[in-house]
Image 1 (cartoon, rainbow, N blue to C red):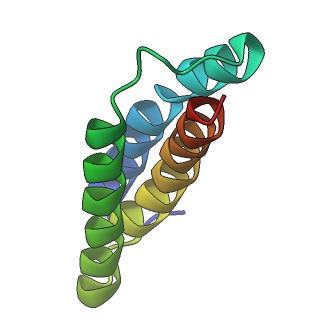
Image 2: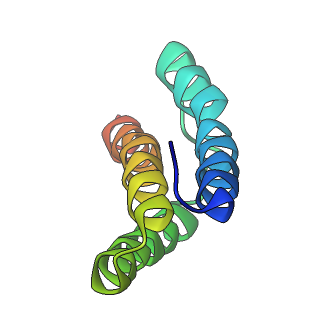
Length: 88
């Protein structure tokens, strides 16, 4: 199991905040519309998450790395859909 109980807290916190992006990904994908999503916000957010990943690797913090990689995947999907649907 995990050596430090706070690692479990960090993983759970990260999992919950990451999962919060799933409804937006699904809604955007199903509706094929991202008109109400801020491009600037998602660009800034994805950059911030990437920096958290770099930080997590530098300090060897598993919860920071794992949860931010998952968050970047989901937020990156929203960003990609925003860019795709803005072309139409």
